[in-house]
Amino acid sequence: MRAYYYDNTAADQRELHDSGVPVSTEELQALGVEYRRFSGSDSENLASVEQLCQERSYKNRDEINISPALLPNYEEKIKTFFTEHIHEDEEIRFILEGAGFFDVRDRADKWVRILVEAGDLLIVPAGIYHRFTLDTTNHIRAMRLFKEDPKWTPINRPEADNNKHRQDYLRAVTVFC
Image 1 (tube, one colour):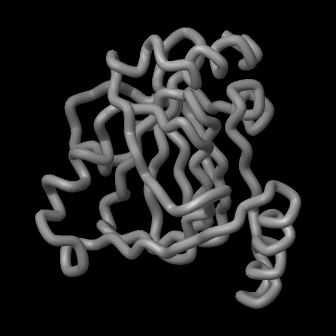
Image 2 (cartoon, helix red, strand yellow):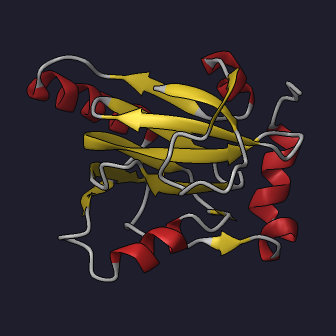
């Protein structure tokens, strides 16, 4: 995992967009974003994921496999993923193959880019503005974990500004600006 401020250039969203200003895991934690690295064997990593599921009451999971060959209307879909939004549940992803970027807003409304690769697990809190894209390899396979039935319901900005989960997030987050 590597995190840094997004450079806001007009380059393709799948490029690094590294401003050269790093963001630490402590700064991510202050935003409510949790990161874990699993670097064992596949069976050890799955056992670690199982333990996390028990600790956090995740009851369901599925896998997504995204690439131009596997996802119809690929270019259109990844633009949809890159639209700024929140969820009313936390978003949990364990990366199995490939790589991508989660961009999250800090308290000053700046984008923080988080590169995730195989072995990385990221937990994005409910109510935080974020977006997702693949990297230039155009492939990622990830396990999605859910507390209840699998769902992925984005609430786009600005409609989400007054959402209860957004307001709860703003009250809970630590300012690190």
